[in-house]
Image 1 (cartoon, rainbow, N blue to C red):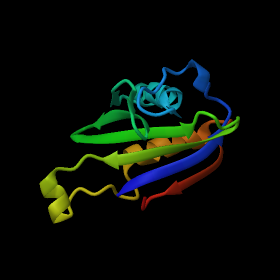
Image 2: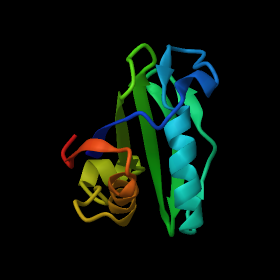
Image 3: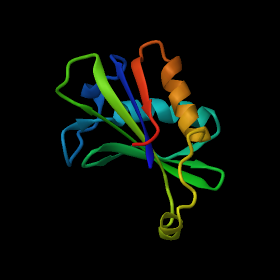
Image 4: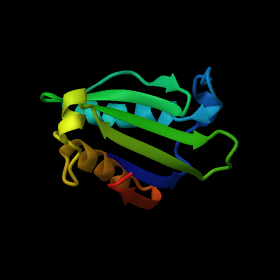
Length: 131
């Protein structure tokens, strides 16, 4: 399972993002913003890359790796609705045996949620820990 954080914000300028070559979906700007904050906290974070459902980065924490994705409709007027998806990387064996699932109190997920909630421009923040 993944955690899904949804919020609205006017903070991110999608017109300054690189064009997603697969689908017209925004997300690079919000991930660049998150990346800066996560790296300040000592996390290793890859640069944002495009995917058909939006944009993603990998976050490394101790021995755990997370895929963090972001998406929003490029045609939606501000304030835009943003979706941040947090998934913990697991081996095939982990999945088969039900091990190493993303816990409700996962440190990376809670840190990302906290970063969003602390931003004055983030409104209507909702978290689904069973997405």
